[in-house]
Image 1 (cartoon, rainbow, N blue to C red):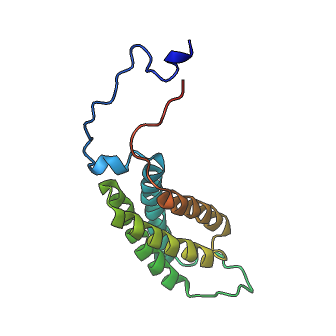
Image 2 (cartoon, helix red, strand yellow):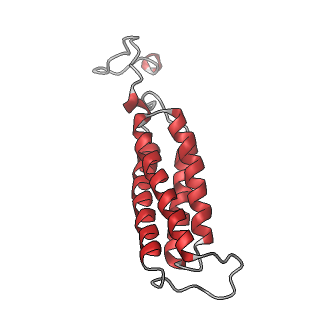
Length: 154
């Protein structure tokens, strides 16, 4: 009875030794990379809308008094617009599965995280949510993608 412990079960096929092609979808097999790409696209679009709102109607936002970092709201609108466009494009580039897209994504989302931290006095609740999302995205981009199938135990 102990002899058949290391033998494959009936019905299970053995690996043929062929290697699978590592195409663009190989990198997206990791759910974290797909999550990061989607969240970057959504976060970039929201930052674009946030920037347009700050540029078009800067009296929409109420600023908290006595905050260390005070900036012109129209300037912040342009900053969020530009950062949002770059984050959106970097999120789209993640679908290519390239390593450079992950590196660019980490850098751009880091800039976005800092921008949302500095945006706290204008829109605190939304900034805290986007800081948390940016943190998860950076984690997702730093997590290595797993290749191959998960090992099964009998």
